[in-house]
Figure 1 (cartoon, rainbow, N blue to C red):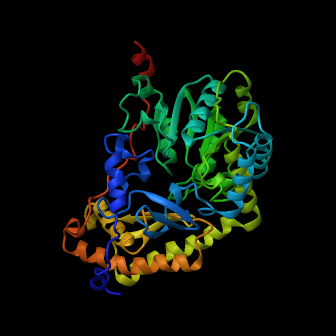
Figure 2 (cartoon, rainbow, N blue to C red):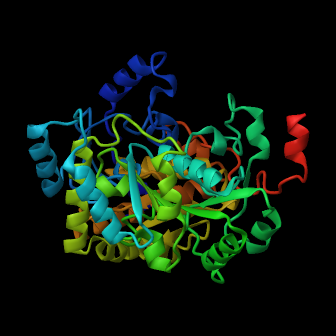
Figure 3 (tube, one colour):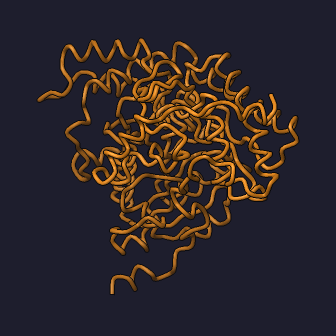
Length: 451
């Protein structure tokens, strides 16, 4: 279908979404609990704002519009919405209760399951959010080493130790400035240059979209081991998607500590801290990390069912196959249409559509493609987060939507003013700077800051 013909498609009616949003403004800061779900990450005026329900890989907004979802709850929906085996496990546990005055057997049973599937897991602690377990891992590393400095690579949540290296750090105490630094992925020499005898932990996403080169992860692990630094893998995305045992299973690199959330419980709130017993044993007394809802039983029941389904059904292999079709299909379409300003990169289980700045502001071009995909019934945020419920027909439908939408975007880019084709507002950045920031520790800076 040509771009001109595609333009006749109607936009979804989002009247009820807009009414809810109006009620939220002024009551809920930024109107959302999760920034990646908020209206700033979608083409305002075109995209739905509130979803009512989901089943499989489809969602319905509050106005009744249906979409194939490529976001899947921003990662947690690994099997699918309203997935029978998981929902039955939740319902069965609900009959018995949710949270109790003593510990629940599922705490032991799910910890044993996690130990079975994650290679470096010798002990387990549960919590509710990825930021919590990531911060707990940093605290453990500092307690274990007696040092305080942290090097990080990737996104690690909203807590002070990490936000100190972002441009959204209002309210973060200044002492964090000399305790946390970053290094760039696949820059091993830059990483080595950032090391000193005050580093307690290296916290990193093992992969995001770029693959490790020249045994990058292996060399990081060796350097940490030689210097007594605790290596922490933030496996919020790689865990239970890249492989059942996450990136450490896939790459054969075992960190000292690893943290998980998202995919483990198919949407229920659960986060996991795992690692070497020598370090985890500090949680017995020296390091305090407890939470009222850590043993909440519905999420643990969901995790048990999710892990069992993944083991039995080969979910990770399925995600790799379907994701390959989608990623490679997008790139083939771009070649066929002669589009050089966009391509799809990353691993099959989570790939990213990128835009060259030569086409214009990437956020504007992305918003335009998002607008056209939403018009075609695809809930799209630039990333392909696939689930076990994305079937062959769903992948084919997404590729057909790309085939119709990309010529519309190309035509707008060709005019030199893609923003003119937007019916809504451009997208907002989450962080204005995402690499090469705060990378080099300043010798003596800690001592100077303390004076």
